[in-house]
Image (cartoon, rainbow over all chains, first blue to last red; front, top):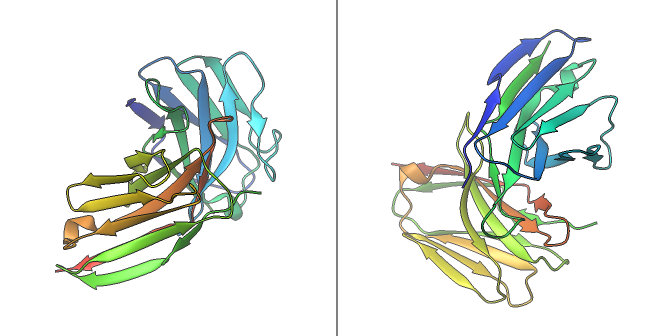
Length: 116
Length: 111
């Protein structure tokens, strides 16, 4: 498994502002995933972040709203831009298993965002 | 579009009871993952099943992957309050590495 940390762990933000969430992994990985978990809901994939290329976004998510950086193989950031109360969610990053199935993923602790 | 239907969504039982959570899809998955998530934490991987008909046991938890790799179940024997949490199934694609998550089952085990 991988050790994954996220910063900040939680934040309360005003609408119209932006927040950048960091994800750090203890080993080099090609792919990193960003998910959103709305209150009381399951996980929805926002995008896949590959080092050295643009992130690939899922249907319903766009780069202008959720810009992603992947400067190296152990780090990624997700920015939630021009926030509204509907963006209040848990944001999670994950990485695939390096030694087993690539579709087995390990998750960070999440960033709990509340937008007022 | 691949979908995973997870049921039940909520389950409240007494300590010592047995329970089963189901995940069903019309799509074939290359693997099926089960996660458990506690409040304030990220999902923690419990098991991965990859072979149709596969059964894996983790102490009091038994996981099964359907023969056609379209469905899975999680059975907990003699549930304990420490089993309380959100259980998530996720279907995996070996082509993309992506996961499709079920809606989750919130389990409460009362002492």
